[in-house]
Figure 1 (tube, helix red, strand yellow):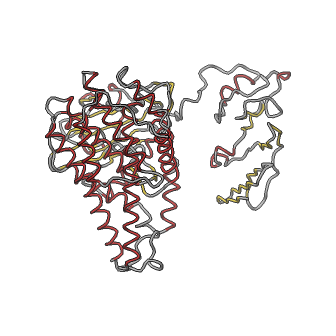
Figure 2 (cartoon, helix red, strand yellow):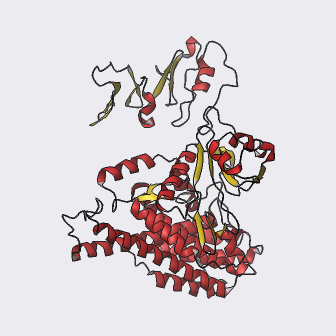
Length: 555
């Protein structure tokens, strides 16, 4: 039995038969009538504070013409056909479609202009195009402070968004430049058939601010967040900064990005974890960040769809057809991906970026910025580390397809991968040890001083085990991120822009073979290669001809 009290709201949940009541805690109201459906007892809830109730507990919404239920079957919770209703609710899955229900059941026909659920389009939201964005943002004092008090017609607007989800604009005046990013209520690269919640913009704005507080020199400053339009206005990152992936494809060498990204993750992952925070603060943050709906998108496109014949998957065909078919029947690999999915969904270690790849980093020599944290949530540290490591390996294997990049450039990329992870470990462990040497000497909740005396061999051993497990997770997550970029929905330009399909497929086969090794070794006590061993394996595979190579199917 669970009992939860939210100020004047009381909720009680007991084992079946299900009984739910919401009422002021000092004067409980009577529970509304319940109905039988498929052997379960479901209670309709109506209360002024129903919007704080978990959706999974709401079985219906009372309207003046009947009850709109999320259960798609007839019964006393729907308006009977004899009374002018449809006899069933206009619902699918867990969506309570109020407009559709009212159209079906109201005495007077409702106009078709009544809103229908498309993701979570909020009141006042309109997509801002190139011709309207300047007029909108020039009303903001924070933007005027950068661009000057200009007529919107004096602002030069350029759309630069090449991502899968959002509009991104650069707005420039004679006084300065800003970036405006607006979330769309659907997956942009797919269309309106795949709706998304606009709340992700709120999480991105919060993540940018949290990251800026820890690493102000590695994260753009947020100037304004407009919730009604799901719009973030932020600091412009000027040339010669470029998207890191484009630098790799052009064969450009930036000697500082690896240390910068390693430092960013070392600081962010430690400072937001229970190694730094006390238990109450940590649990509060986990709760606050666990509602980002984009986690569901990640679960689908990273851990699920690549391992079956999902409609939006794509790959280089026919060259990869046999590989992909065997990949999806590879029991060891598919189980490994499921284990990693479980960790992604249940292991809340720190505030992770959630989509950290070489397209979400802008860099030039001596300066790096991490951008686009809209997927941020409290999850496993290894997910961020693996995502970035996996993207470096994808870039490495793509070098034969880019004229300005060759084997020597590939070796340089492997060195950057080593520099990145080594820097992360150095920064992370330094912060951990410094936290123990603080005046209180308490550190965070996770390894409290009672059972783990400061400076003890017991604590040092615990630290070694922690880092070993973190590396195991990093290797596994890197593998699934590589696989999804070759056989899933969203690919990477490093490989996709290799015009020669035969050459591209050879590069992709090497990626898939290494990725399989990484995923399978990361679970059930598998022997995980060290960082040095992994990079050496990558290099050996790079040099191996792919003619006649088959998929190593596991049982």
